Each structure stands twice: as structure tokens, then as C-alpha cells.
Image 1: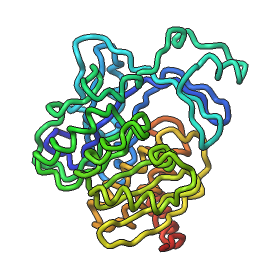
Image 2: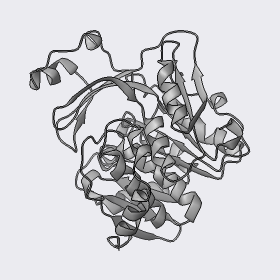
Image 3: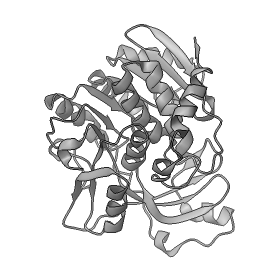
Image 4: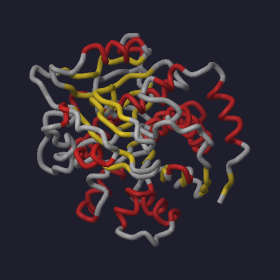
Length: 336
């Protein structure tokens, strides 16, 4: 697939993951990153998927080949001429709670030796809330190729400064549908005013419930009040992702809202569930022009992702599985 065939573009990170699942299984040095999880969630519904990301010269070429072999275009991945650290550590202490600091304590918790690859580990996300400058891995507007074929684009959690400029670039390229999943690094009171700038230029805003509550500095606020407040910042659709509680969809145009339950999946690893959801939502919205149908597509994508390990698992599922789950979920949705 050439760049000119891409209809859905996913902008974000490609990472080398080291993680502990909620059942204390350990995975070391595997393909990860929110861009590939989102792209894979979209690939369930469309073959015309591409990624924009930045990696160092030391990034494993075999992973780019695996992504390409899975039918996802990597022509928008910038490989820089110097090595960069793209390691990401995280541990799940439950299906709902993820921690991404102090790996030694988590390996000690499960009586597993600290892997030598993590002895000098420092989180690669520590500079993601910088308001002034691009770090080497921060995606620049010029990284996004000008492609007439692109119908919709999703911006995955990444550096704050990238989120302030990428939607502007996408509008300049006449991309008609733009979604964004915010970074937890700036969903807090220090970015109260700045968030308006990001959300105003979006069609779809997809924070997690934890991120939303962190932004409003309270656990008491009603989820619908949060969704409507985000909608008042200028975007058309807000989805608050709430893990096993499902998703809360607010259509700021029609002023309608729905609760979509999480599909009862056989959970193996929840990594990338939110990203995969965003990928499915974007394609579903473009295909159907219906926010509720888009939310159902996203929920199905997430349900398939959590049943395996790694972002490419969802692409290899049985034919007809996604469609069957989509029909099942339609019967469970309720308007609120």
C-alpha cells in the first residue's frame, strides 16, 4: 500500500514495551505504542490505515516490517539519524489501574528479578508536558504528509506541544474529521486554559474518566457534566472512556447522550484498549456518520485487543467476529 492509499491516519508513539499484566505476567521488549494500537483498532474496520510517528536509528526494523506486513502503512514514520530511548515500562495493579514509574518495586512485588534492560530506566514521557519546545520524539506539523486520500485522522496521547499544533496542520490539509485522545500529563489544573485551545479545533475528544476527573480536580462531578463541559470548549463529540464501566457518549450537536457498556471480553491484557477504541471510533464515525455507531465500533475494537498480547493481535482475529460483536452491542446500548 502506497502513502496515497491511506484514508485513516494515526499520529502518536511507537515504543518498546516492558510491562506486567494485571495477572502478573511479564513481557519484555515487545512492540508497543499508542499509534500502533490505535491503527490496529482501526484496521479491524478498514484496510487503508497509516501511521505518523518518530523513532530513533536504533528502533528495530523488524517491528516496522511486522507492522507493514499486517497491512498498516509506515511511510509516515520518521527514523531519525541518532539513537533514541523509546522504552516504556508500566505495571497493572488491577485491570483499571496502571503505574508507569519505579519498575524495581513492581518486579519485587511479583518476586521477579529486575530485567537488566531497565536498570537505567527513565520514563520517556517525562518531557511530554513541556509547553515551550519539541523534544526529539515530539511529532511536528511537518511530519504529517500532505495526502489527498486521507479522510480522517486521530492524534494519540503525545507531547502537549504536539497536541497544540497538529490539529491546525490537519485542518490545513483539509482533513474533515479529527479526533484526539489527551495525554494524562497535561490533564490537570496546570493546563486549565490550554486545554480549551486543544479541544476547540477538534471534532472528537476522547479522554478517560480518570483524566477527566484529574482535570476537574474532583471525584464528585457527574460524568455527563464533564462531557458537556468539554463539548462547550468547541468539539462536536465527547467520549469519556471508563474501562469496564463502558463509555459515555455526548453528542454536542444533537445534545443527545448514550451509555455504551463494555463488551464482556475474556481479558488477557488491557494495554492499548483505549487507543484501539479510538481507532475503531474514528473509522466507524467516517463510515456511518453516526456517533453511536462509531462508539459501538470503538467498543468492539477494544474488546478484541484486550483478549491478546500486543497491538497486532486484533488484526489476526476470526472473520466475522467484529461484526457479530457489533450486533450484540447494539442491543445493549441505552440512551440517557
